[in-house]
Image 1 (tube, one colour):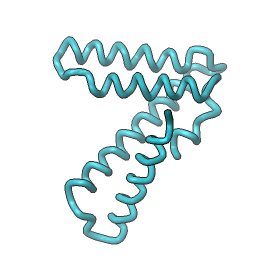
Image 2 (cartoon, one colour):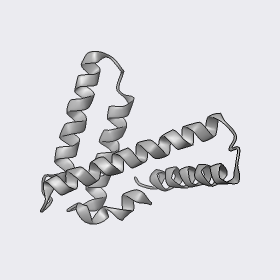
Image 3 (cartoon, helix red, strand yellow):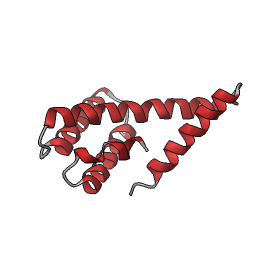
Image 4 (tube, helix red, strand yellow):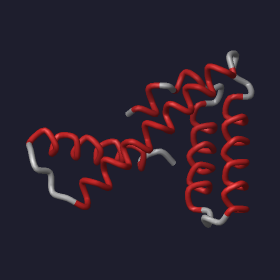
Length: 110
């Protein structure tokens, strides 16, 4: 949902988004040691640069990619909390369902 909203930012949206998501997954799943952390940060920065390098406004692209990444992280935080604890209110249940829906949509990107 949120990822598709910013599709206009990418020159070749499908290919760049696939590369971005693949690279992001690699960064997230790398071991958590200090050298691995630096490598993860370097890889994330290179990925960020690569996705936006051919964009007509690379700074805007990088900013939006960062916002998308924060949104995905926030959605994951909500999803994880929903898996740990049963929603206490109808509003919480709505947020949990929304988080599940976003994850399902992200899963459709290949």
